[in-house]
Each structure stands twice: as structure tokens, then as C-alpha cells.
Length: 273
Image (cartoon, rainbow, N blue to C red):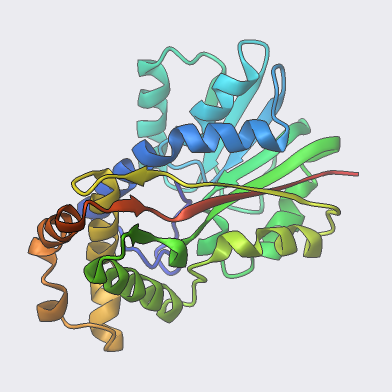
């Protein structure tokens, strides 16, 4: 999830966008946990999850660190934090807590063993300054790791023109909102510019069939960005025909029995020295 600010979150703050985020979480949660482990999270760590949203990444980190570890999720939105607490309670996750805060100005009393964030840097105007400011909260020898998308890698194999066109619309709308649709491939450089050295990088890619959550995610991403598309002249409402887009996309994928690859989820990580 992401920490959203009204002026910077180009996807909007509608109920449909909230639903889209839930679909996205269901596709990526196991991949996020894998990337957290790959980055060096392990049992017993104390972890800070920034821009935690409704808590999916915090809960993934909690599974990694186990009962001997602790996870603190921070977000600026009190509404999503209530949902995060409900999600943690439903899973009886006693090693997770949530607090309201604004990045990077967090006032926390103890250093953490790891700093994590998923799909947060893409929505920030100055990700380098944010990472640099947050790294002070991590002890020497601790881990800083962020995860983000490469959206232009979204595709159907065999190729489906409607999938390709939808991804182009989505990428263009994000660029119009001054967001890099391929922030994932920038993460290692962000860490280096933040003063961290020798970052590692790994990638995980969920897939789906012709009539799957993968297709839904692409269509609902287009829905969230449709106002930007229309304002910028990227596509008209008639061209997108959002209420039938998912059905048409699923049908086109079924016709060629395509496998749909949703955005690559990239993790970059480095040790605090």
C-alpha cells in the first residue's frame, strides 16, 4: 500500500481505488514476503514499515520476524490505520502496531533493525530526501529496503492489443502526474543517492490467466487514472469504455489463451553502515 497525500496520489481517493488496492494486495502479498526475506529480514528483527496503508506489508514483515520480533506500521491516514488494526486483529498478529505519522518527519524513540516500504516512493516528490531522512531511524548494520513497480513490463503473452494499449494509457497518465511508471528500476539508484552503498536488487512477477485478478488489476488501474487520461488528452472516456474494459480484456485474452504478467515488483536493499 502507499501513504497517500491529496496533492501527490495521482490514483485518486475513491472507493473504487480502495477496492483496486485490495486486489493489488491479494496479487502481491506472497511476493512481497519473498522479497522481504531476500532483502535480509529475519526472525527477531524490529521493523518499521512506512506508508503502511491497511497493513499488508506490515503483516508480511510480521510473519518473517516471528513472535520474537516487532513491526511498527506508519501512515498519515487515520482511516486506513483503523483498517490496518482490524486486519491485524483478524489474524491475531500480536507483534504488529500502527501509528499515524508523516514522512520523513517521524519522531520514534528506538532504532529499528529494518526499514521497509512498498509502493511508496513512486508517490513522493523527493524519494531520495525521504529515504535519507528515514535511514537515521535504522541502527548500523540494519537493512533499508523498498519495493516498487515496473509498470511498463505489464503484458499478455501471446500479446493482446487491448492489454498493451491499456498499459500505455496507465503509464502515460502516471507520467502526466509526474510519477515514474517504472520506479522499480530506479530504486537502487535512490538508495545510492541516499548514502547507502552496494544495493542488492530482486524482482518478483505475479501472473494470471485470461479471466483473473491480473486482468482486473489492469482494468481497475485504468479506472483510477481515467480522470488524468481525459484531462491530459491521453484517451477519451469513449476510447477506454471503462465499464466494459475488463470484460473486453478478459475475452481478448481468452481468445488466445494468454498469460497476463502484471507489473514487476522490484525490491532494492542495502545495509546501513
